[in-house]
Image 1 (cartoon, rainbow, N blue to C red):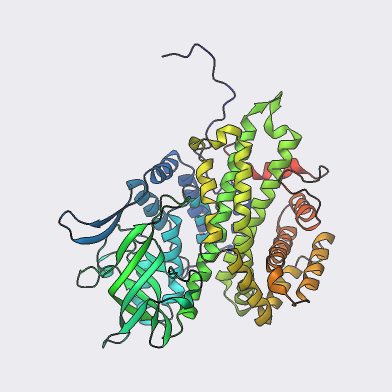
Image 2 (image 1 turned 135 degrees about the vertical axis):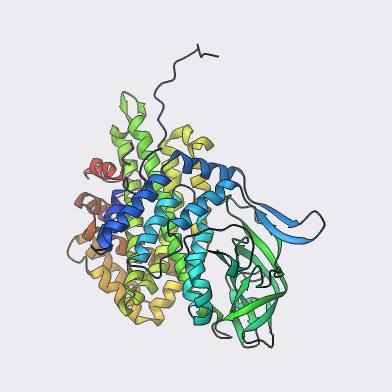
Length: 545
């Protein structure tokens, strides 16, 4: 029936059919900065192809459907046999298959592997964030498995494969596998040393049977898991395959799937081990040390994932404000809206630049860069993931009531936003980890200060902020109560140093004035009006807008 009551006008076209990578100037510049010239053309080609896919109507539809139809747990078959399988919507498998084929589980063995993977993860996460969990776990398992060369020889080629094969079969019969992780238990949560799951040695070398549970098991449909359990020699790390080499199912009872705030497309489960076969990874009693490489890699993915959510939220807000008119002109031209958008854009750019710098450090893999990462990763994980929810919430408001409606995609971003702050250690865990590095690892502090010092003299507000931070670090009395304050400053001076070196002057000026100089209010949109805010917003505008 034709509408006769009114004419539809002043509605914003969807942000679709664009290259998510090429439309992001901050990300493209970071890739060009951190990738060697001889490798760069191939990397840019890969990311452009992925960017076009991420911005396509098809990928957006996959993301919407995967979230509208969450995974379903089937504990038994029709005959009463225990099967413990998770059923996903076909869109989930399409998203995951595309990501694997784009190399998003392959960072450890190719030139600029971490930078190109982090950039791809940032791009593809903007299509749908939930399936990033198994991608992240699979990618991050490599350093843990490398503590056992025999295990790594078998599993690493499958983890880094560009082939996605759904369904449970013996790993050696598949062209590619996914790996999950199970660390926390009901009684301890982050305090994994209170774990009670027992590992009983078997006669075979490195073979054990596990009895116990995991309160949060990431990606329970995966082909295998790295888990922590108490062996005779103490807390140890184990590889638990879902299907044993002879084709029988390893005891792995999924009790239920978590009903989560966001991350709806992804399965997170509670699992029970009852005589579950496992293979020791590393040495008995050194489980935390063995799995810490996996934790560090997933924490970095939390930073990258949050940067992706922020970027997509800001892109949507700028796009909407470009096409939506109010009070006689486009919203983007209104001084107050421009201030809000510029403030959001600053937060997004700082997050992306920091995430990519950390990825580049992983590629360099020198003693200096490893020391830098020891302090910078938990600080970035603390700060960037916490800023994500605030950014997405304000960006949603830029769309008004339209942003509060599911069809806009903004509510899904907002529900997803807090996740990375909680996963892999919440805020207090990260803050305490930074304190440990500050107190026990002088090499990490020195590496961090050398990195920040590269921006010395570029902005007086940055110099003053570094001086204040050094004063704060000089007083370790009662520092735990000040930990969040200290870590926030660590992250901000690092972001400031990166931006004064690599961002346009108007961006660096606005960041230093507001984040380091204190010239802003308590909410977004309170930047000094004398700054070049129009240029900051224009830089954040996606090409399709």
